[in-house]
Image 1 (tube, rainbow, N blue to C red):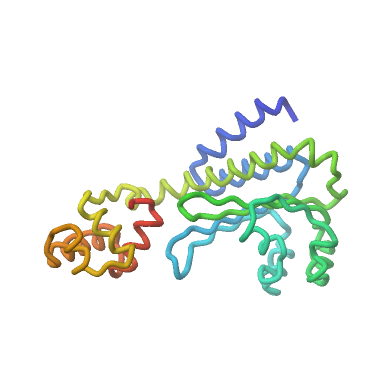
Image 2: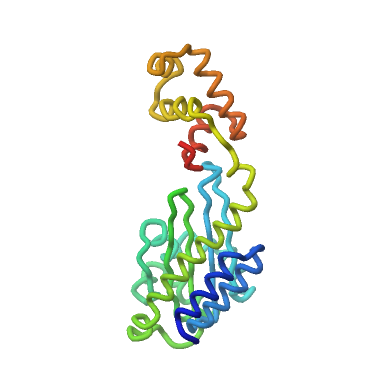
Length: 239
């Protein structure tokens, strides 16, 4: 690998300016290979819709393993996924890690996945992502981990931001939503559990005016009702 600063600059620019998911993953998998990993998997869960968050997943595992993973619903017992939900600490694949799911670990190794590393990332919007780097040969040594730890952690964050940029472009209409100061204040009090009548008293306006601002916000955000409107506004960091 070339000088790490040049590698990061070139790779980061390519990830952050990718215009399609395919281009994004082509760059990501190339950077993973530079770090010594033949396999790369990336997953991202958006915060909306709250009841059924949008999930984006891509990897270059063998088709046989992808089908096997889905058929056996391994995501339900995958310890790297369970870890990613509650921690951003990097995780190295070990026999101890998979001791509660030995059949899954044996199956993964049979499909050429013998060594791996994973780390998750979260952002203020509530989006979460997980980057997994894997290979079919030697295990990760402590020396290798120390040498590449900074670059691997950098790749996690850069991948997360790169995908966020892609999604932001697709959601330009949502990102351009502008709430008035009155609408923001009404929704903030509503988020605190105040009724329209209570919000009216606090803001010294009529209950009808409060509902007017709420209905405007609901329409602007394309929400189903007041509750959904407040949740969406919070997720979009409009309040």
